[in-house]
Picture 1: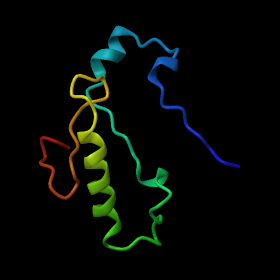
Picture 2: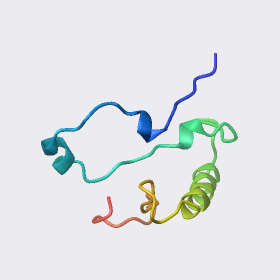
Picture 3: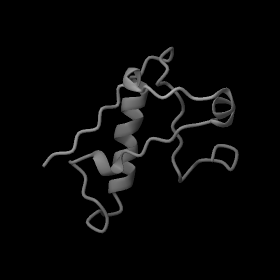
Picture 4: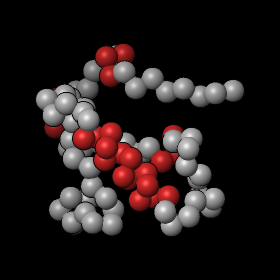
Length: 84
């Protein structure tokens, strides 16, 4: 059985309260487990994580900066305390 996740934000029917909206300051997207061309740990090696980051940087760079999906990508290896 293949699991498919629909990431279309227009299909979200839950309305957030104003209180909830003020508390959400960022969103993380975890992609590593959804990329079939990369092995999952412990099958991964030292080149896997940087390769995933390289690919995702290209994906994020292609997103229109005016889009609601735009944002910043930070690598764990280089992000500052303020960015985490």
